[in-house]
Length: 122
Image (cartoon, rainbow, N blue to C red; front, side, top):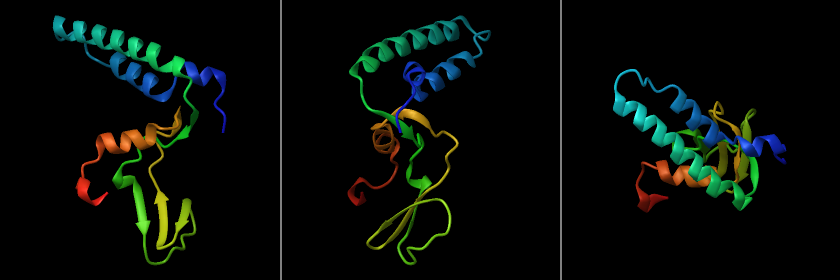
């Protein structure tokens, strides 16, 4: 699925980070305002470096952590959902509330950034 041109300007990680920055309560302290401004500046800098790389953009899950992957090694037969049959069973991806256009590699990279399991059993 090709991403519309307007999507490239406001991809999921950039848009979500901007939303988080807008929701920071800066009335609490001067340091918080400085932090929010610095975070906004850093985001713009990262975006200016990443976007020109012209990496492939596709529809992504954006939260593909271990708890959002269900593996049924026995039946291999599920009636609903996005299913990918493998030799020993079925893999089902759940929890799509963050699904949106993003860089194709994001789901894989984010999975390993947030992986909280035993690295010896990947």
